[in-house]
Amino acid sequence: MKTLIKNGCVVFYNKIARLDVAFSENKITQIAEYIAPEGFDNIIDAKGKYIMPGAIDAHTHMAMPFGGTISSDDYEAGSRAALAGGVTCYIDYAIQKHGDTLLEILNRRKNLAKNNSYVDYGFHLAITDFNDDIADEFKRLKDYGVSSIKCFMVYKKEKMNVDDATLAKILALGKQNDILVNVHCEDCDVIDARIEQFLKEGKTSNWYHYLSRDEEVEALGVKKALKIAKDADAPIYIVHNASKDGIKAIMKAKDEGQIVYAETCPQYLYFTNEVYQSERAALYVCSPSIKNKESRTALWEAIWANYIDVIATDHCPFKLSEKAWGDHDFTKTPNGCDGIENLYRFVISAALKNRLSLSKAVELVAHNPAKIFHLKNKGDIEVGKDADIVILNPNGEYVYHNKDTFSNEDNSIWEGVSYRGIIEQVFVHGKLAFKDRKILISKHEGQYLKR
Ligand code: URP
Ligand code: ZN
Ligand code: ZN
Image (cartoon, rainbow, N blue to C red; front, top):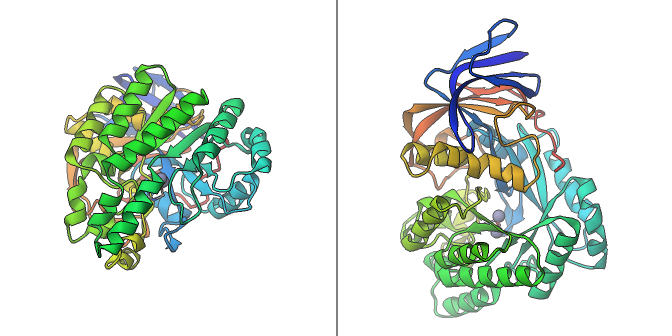
């Protein structure tokens, strides 16, 4: 099938230009001011529309065992929601069970995702049980197609955290083997001490989730991780930044020449900690918590000043009934929110409302994640890259309702949020995959990406 999209405005990470785009099979074959229509099976007139690369969600947790349950979107549901939102690739966190080798971590998740994903996927491996064998296996990670691993500084009770000395060792191994280390930064000892105190005092509402992991707690973790990475002379990628002091510390480190990548998420750019005083508080319980207005402003300023590299979702939804487990004890509320369906819609809408440019949106959710995480055929409208393409109508507006979701969720933090811009068509591997709110490909389409 040879497709030609005519008369659209192509959004690159550094410019927008009126160009025709042609693709055949899985690859973009030509981009030019004028491409003659002869020889194409399918010609689309995109006058007044934007042609954009499919987005990459660099941070997801599909079917993740966590908080006493499993996150409610499996690969099938999460990737279907991704596709409907113009996300044509995601990198999921495969989390080590104690005793697993790195290959076992990877293979377990590959088996779950295989033939169950509408769009392409890769994995970051999260190490929770580091030992000499794992250290030795680092040199094989690239052969497995894995170029990034993750460490949690938190979730001590869940036995998911690594201590500072282990983080230092892993960062050093990352540097030696050209593997980027992603870190969830919060100070777990302060969190645990605060939780103990709150529960003793009978302070059990979800507001105390926020107070147990507030601005200070996150900034402490970020500063510590930056120092450990600096001492190891290793690059570091700090996931889901939510706090002003944390992002300021990253900005300073970047200014001083340290190699640091910063990610934030739509929930930290849109909501504030007031959500934890609402009736729906449980839905917003995620870690790090959503911070105050000052932090939200600081994150936007960091985007405008080019200090944020990636916006990703940390997609990790749970059912309403599970969210209610914490009604009388916030520590029992499963941590995580939905996001993948609304990632591209959120940044596109923000761009169309002049919060950032469309090119910047593409840079943050497509170009940069592809570059940082070695997805060499993704992230840009460019000859030779995969034909994962979104056609955006900038004129429509709508209000998101979870009843219309493509995922498995029965709730959404994005319920009632209004968006500008309609993702009208999505191509995956050059095939029309989503149009008129209908999914047109099968769940076998997505492939594991070695990166
Ligand atoms: O609350 C969250 N973010 N849940 C998923 C696990 C993590 O920390 O990324
Ligand atoms: Zn995390
Ligand atoms: Zn996460």
